[in-house]
Amino acid sequence: MRILVLSDIHANLPAFDAVLADAGTVDAVWCLGDVVGYGPDPNECIARIRDLPNLICLLGNHDAAALGRLDLSSFNREARLSAEWMQGQLTVESLSFLSSRPEREVTRFVTLSHGSPRNPVWEYLLDTHTAWLNFDHFDTTFCFVGHTHLPVAYFAQPDDTGVEWRLIKADETVTLKQRAILNPGSVGQPRDHDPRAAYAIFDPDALTWEAHRVSYDIASVQKRIQEAGLPPRHALRLSEGW
Ligand code: ZN
Image (cartoon, rainbow, N blue to C red; front, side, top):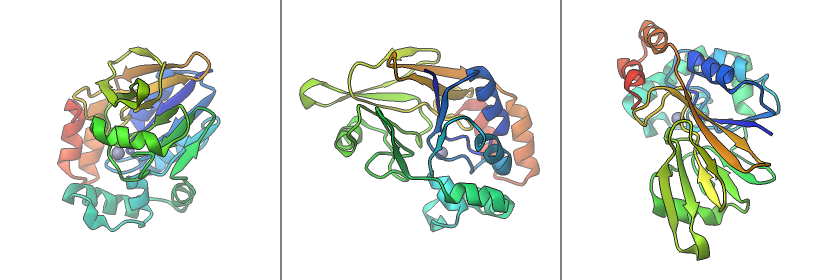
């Protein structure tokens, strides 16, 4: 069984389409939130994702911002500008899709959340201590998160002695032998200095996690970010992956 796990599409349709083409046929799609925000294609990304097979698609903090559920002063200036732009773009259909997104889902082996199982929409898992505390906040063997835009794995050590952390390399297959929190990285705005779109394929029968990267036409997205009057930094960062 092949489950496409992705996160943080961030309104970048060419990156999203490249991921879908590269992943090929899958049995299910699990999106860990932030379909919108930063990029130029919020409605197009929602239209694309809503028809994917056996879809679970969570609410991310940028999706919550699009719905007006957040005080935008919690965002930095550029994120706030792009959130305001996005609020002006979203169609009724897009808003209706976003407003029915869950914050957290639990499947047979896996808990899914955008940021962390403890604080699904907001918390960033960026260090082993925070990850360790979060292992007490889900009962399944695995937890998949997005939000940091970094493809990483946190592995619980035997006898509850702590957590080991590492970045997952492009095209690496990880065999899952212990409890773990895994992040597929970001489709539309990678931040690990690899500008290619990131995603993962989870096989719950073989218990494997395949990390993938795929190139897309970054220049075309940068051009449309500029034409839309979105902050230039959101275009610049795409070519370097930060
Ligand atoms: Zn994000």
